[in-house]
Length: 116
Length: 110
Image (cartoon, rainbow over all chains, first blue to last red; front, side, top):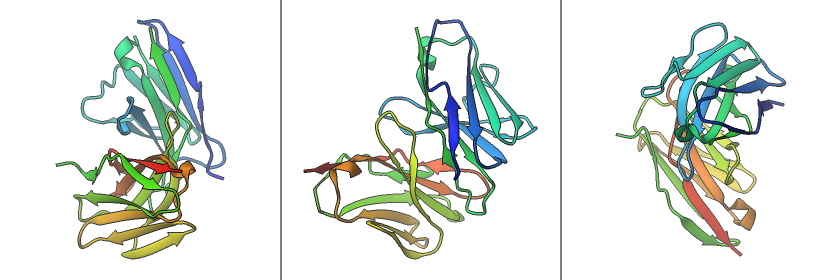
């Protein structure tokens, strides 16, 4: 149980285009989903927290107009990187929380984005 | 001040030895503590979590929590080359907030 999927797993795009990444909780309802970014040899950096049906809460320094997050249902959240640039190339990982008391999160497999 | 601190390593241990990974946190009100393992190019996978003072054992892994010292550790007994990875400590102060450490790189030498 507690499986989280991401799609696509790998994407290459041209500078200036937009890329949408999907995160799905397959066997549980996720009250909260998180989006992280990880650059090579660095730790996870939380970008934003989203609750179903409400606006995402972005961490300081993360541009909400550039990284659009939609949490349309209890099993689906999307991250759209708008007008992507090479510096946005990174490993994007989502996680989902079923709202357990201990706060456990279940991670998706990640999406590697390369912007040319 | 960082919320969660870990020694980045790299930590090298011979196969069969005990690997000891340490983590300190700043929020005294933190409730839950997690250890994740991350292989290169992959997303983190949960090893175990702990929320009570003392030790919690799961197979070759033992998590130790000392809330008074704001310290949590992970011991890996009988280390195997497949344990070579980056180990992330995560702390859950309240609700759904998670703070991750920068991770400790572990290499188990055959």
